[in-house]
Amino acid sequence: MTTPLLQVENLHKYFPIHGGVLQRVVNNVKAVDDISFSINPGEVVGLVGESGSGKTTVGRTLLRLEEATSGNVKFNGVDVMGLNGRDMRAYRKKMQIIFQDPYASLNPRSKVREILTHPLRLHRIGSASDHEDRATALLEKVGLSRDHLDRFPHEFSGGQRQRIGIARALAVEPDFIVADEPVSALDVSIQAQVINLLEDLKTDLNLTMLFIAHDLGVVEHICDRVIVMYLGRVMEIASVADLYARPNHPYTQALLSAVPVPTPGKRRDRVILKGDIPSPINPPSGCVFRTRCPLATPECAKVVPPLVPVGEGHASACIHTT
Image 1: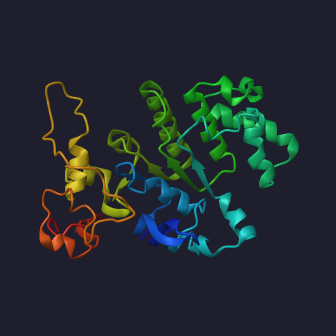
Image 2: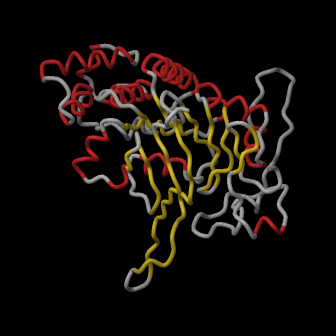
């Protein structure tokens, strides 16, 4: 049995809301509410769901860009939540992130040379004389050239900036990457190029990745397994083949019904969800999806459905489909 590279157990992330004269905590935004999953070495796991479901918060909390409220995140068996500053810096070399917005994620005052060599200096990788050659190699790996080293971020297109962001994430040779919707801010034609680049890097470097997205077509193309989130909770986990062929949870079925079919004249039977996603400040009792679920019954308000197996490597959190 493969030992997971990353093991997430009962992860919570609440953002406090302060109010009153004394600015006491009066409530919490429950962005991530008790989720557990694992990622094996060399595996790309997709994390999907509507905006506001907590996907980005999960990715940022795994890397401790946001501190978890509670729960454990074990990387190679080590609980990174308990590491101090010096030890955590060593683990940051092993875990990197590709940010969603290529415009905001690069320092506009730094040339590409500085952007790519700064992580090398910070983690003391190689000698100063080797850094430029290493930066050049990184650019070539993502489809750019040495001529781009002395340019500023504003001199590049959105797709080129995201390639630089990918090169920066690869600079320290990480074992694990969080890709936070890396193509959502790009034009469709550029999206395909970046997805193909990530797929090539996955094969060449045996990358382990958490790929956060809301485009299920992209997820099917690049991922091995998929985690479906809704309002801070996991609704379903399955391999790509199982999820797309046999979606179990009503929420997953609704998401997949909205994916366009490439065959002319063929249509999916749409599942239209009513209303908007509830506020994470005051989520529904029991199953958080019940207020929009076509299968909801009074029992759904009384119990939080656990993830239970519905097939090999396939788990779902719904009392009506298990």
